[in-house]
Image (cartoon, rainbow over all chains, first blue to last red; front, top):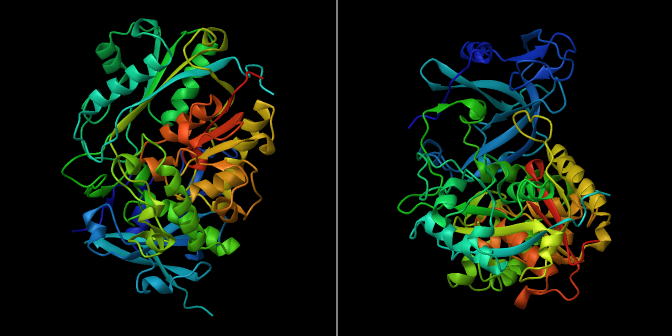
Length: 137
Length: 389
């Protein structure tokens, strides 16, 4: 059974379109330069509506993680146990994304681990961002 | 200090029997709890002129709403009890604590004189609780739904971060869970009391089934079907009623800034601390004045975080505190002991403690009790007192 596939809205479509072409972009306020994820309609920090999607490095580190042994949906019950990690992107403190850290055994994931973006094809042609241990030294 | 300190009181409580599954319609259990609360106050249904309840269940069930079966609306209770109300509200978030605060404010503002608050929790028979099979990730779950992060995991992320940051351990949580089960065996409205639970040893906890590491099954509340109800009125009217009043010294129900994909532990703790300091200062008290604290535990990690948020211990000391608390902690046994009653036990035993009605759980000279419910970013807090000032 496939994982739930993201259903973009008009607001979030640029993010998912980029992901489907294996690029990571994050919405950024052009007024105060703050990144917003998930995307917002209006920047609550500076009230600018000049918001654009900009490429980011795709690098970050694992803020925290959990290993799910008892999922609430069949698509995930099939693959348990699996990791869910919160990844903090290096562009901005608190700029978080989720990842299952594919390719790393569940017990080997640690907080603080440096990671970089990769992409998982959840159904043909539709991708989600994932993160794997950074290959940079 | 708040101007409305001690002007309103909880004057009646009622609780239905609790079931593991929906063996008895939720509407029936709700009528039971409401009747008991009204009777406890020494009132009749004709006196009730306000009614409020949450209109949602804690988890997505994937079922259409069925009034009286998988939720119970205030309108259902108006019809079932023949109430004539001047104020009522069906609240989409916030659960028991939020609705009680709404009722307190409605009474204080004179919109009604005797408000009935109820919280009815549904646990479906014949299927796994909250087990759904969406094909798309959309709305609030658009950026989360494809990764398999569910409510236990959202809180396990905080527990893992806490353990990494402060060196806290699962063994400490095991000691808390074991002590809490002793409280559960004294809470007559709870699942483990009514359905033959025994003690929980540290070994039971350490060897139990993992749900979302580092959280095991005993870090999670068991879903149940049942209802709790409360009657609220002014301090002036409370004097003439059957039970001693549990005076409300203060309430707090903040809204926090929007969250991104996840909260950091630090943001989550800061949200709780904002509630904690407002709640205590509006009551005109400090942490050392509190005799009984019922701190929410829908997931176990929430209790030590709430203890820190209210200043009962310092940052990073929460796990040590809950294993050897310096006040009467979670006398109701919370959700972990009572089942997924979503704030009912925490508030109800706080009321019973300050009115000297807590029976085998009674804390000697319990003058002030604090109840905080829900996770720290959505917390609702109430301070109850034996005396109005």
